[in-house]
Length: 365
Image 1 (tube, rainbow, N blue to C red):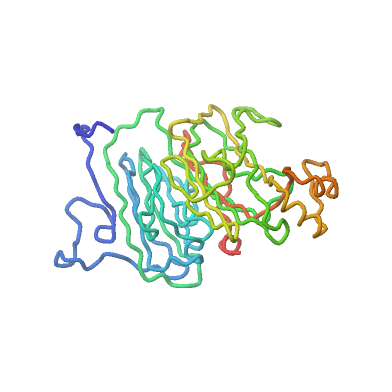
Image 2 (image 1 turned 45 degrees about the vertical axis):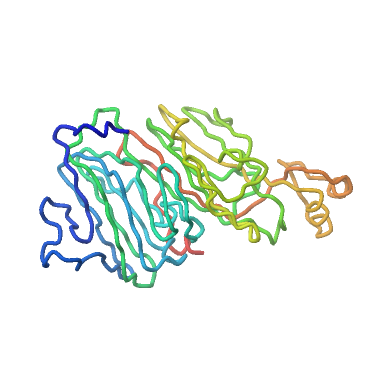
């Protein structure tokens, strides 16, 4: 519990908010009569706003809370949320606002995990500790063509923290493929060089029902390539719903370290997460992480696929559609769907080799 009964020597508490953008001591509600007159700011189309800017000081971001008046899919994907460490020009976090806070697929959801929450599906909360040594900058950019009227937020942090050499920097990376490539695993964390820890990932999936009807999409295994792994990984799971702690499909639930907070069964849209808090994934030199796009047919769905003239494969081997349709049963097959992800990790560097965030048009498509 971070020794709740002790005060670390020299450490002070600060909040950055619209009532005190600079987070300076004794500066909240400056310029008015101390009443509630600056609870939010507006963000015009194309505008960037600094939510916090700290320099020449060490510290730790402790909690980020945000809410906005327009929580449409356009804003959730079109607002760019970024964090910079120690004066670096390149952000370590550059993600759509919604996806960073686990609101994937342009949908808000009510949930709580150990690191993220949205108590009533109207807010964005993160309590991941994010240390810095020389400074931190947090920005929000409106990359849509629509003005955003109201942004409320608190960024709660401490300054004066003493960080040893082994303390790591927080990073996040967003990716999307629509559609994925059959027989090529979806890469939610491209190869990253350095020493660190994979903290967790949140996925969003829109199954291609036009191509694969109502077949189950989630048989793919998570693979984590560590420290020199090339063709084969060191870590591999047994299936998508297995990775997030459930089995035989996945309904809606939200646990501390795993959950499926979006489970739209009629449309086959899903949002789900896994946090590697009790089961850390460490890397000493590099890391890369993927998940397969493999589905499963049932006796009912294989008959419909056969009648529709579909040809399935597993690996490079074609499935004998007539034979399996007559036999019924279950089987796995390669598929392609709309996948997105936001992965969270710590690294021993305030920057990484990961690519920049995809353009807003691609994120919204």
